[in-house]
Length: 155
Image (cartoon, rainbow, N blue to C red; front, side, top):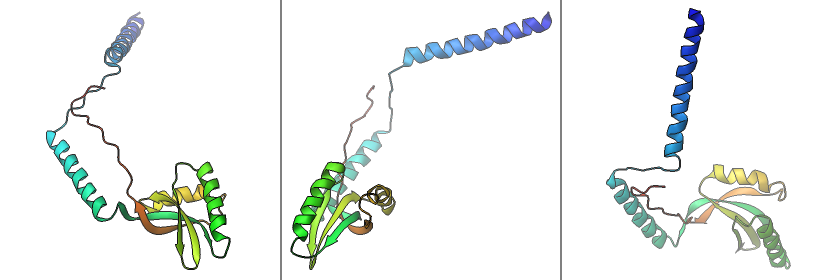
């Protein structure tokens, strides 16, 4: 008899604790309040200013990596490269393709990757279709960052 009452008490405690937890979740569901030090916003502003100066001084390019998927010389190289870029843009619209010429070769390089690791990840996918693709160090376009002002806002 005593054992049954202990089990009943334990069950009731677990039930009420779970019930209170569920009620608390329902009451606060959908709201998030971010409280931060105001100095963080000033640091973010300083970072934006430094990045804008960097992009102005380097024409928006910085050291990074691209994947080269094509290199050819000859009379028909330009037409072949443009045809390849059109197909690439249809298959991978989220990656930019760049056609460059350095005597005597036309090259197609794709992507704007900050790290070799990021480029290697995309290389695995691209090498299925472009079996001679490889990662190369290049000047890349500075990615556009999206800013969100979250100073004490409720979401």
